[in-house]
Image (tube, rainbow, N blue to C red; front, side, top):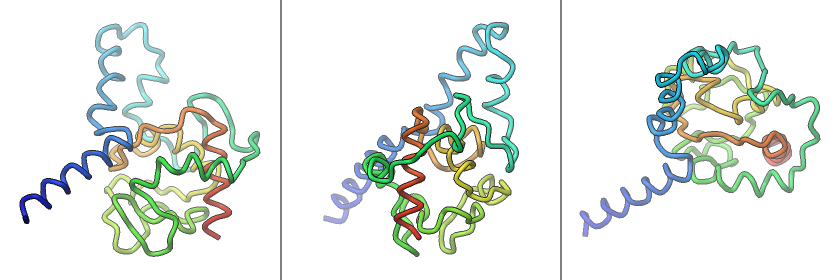
Length: 172
């Protein structure tokens, strides 16, 4: 019976990682392969994005959108957030695969007691402003290289703004 529980636990963990965008190594491989095959074709900004840490106060996005230009819809953000629920909850003091997102706006990165953050996250110097969270949700590994968060990101700027509106309202 114990072996069956362990096996089911592994299946659940595999499903959770798949829901979050798969393993980091798998997500990084496609970006590295084209650069190696055709180094002259890749723009310099894209080549550095995979390896260069984004400054803690920089909020530039890859798609050029800005959080300040968006109007978030918390109701839609709650729907988008369902894909985050595999790893995160908004309840204070409840950590899962990822830390609780209760009170995320205004909090320094890597500060939830009882959660084992990556060194990269703890040392990022980031304070989660709406603009910084907007940038991070686009492509987490770009903003905090070495993060344990395997989620590939939210490509649509409006989805990112909506999730932030939901987190702001739901975690006050």
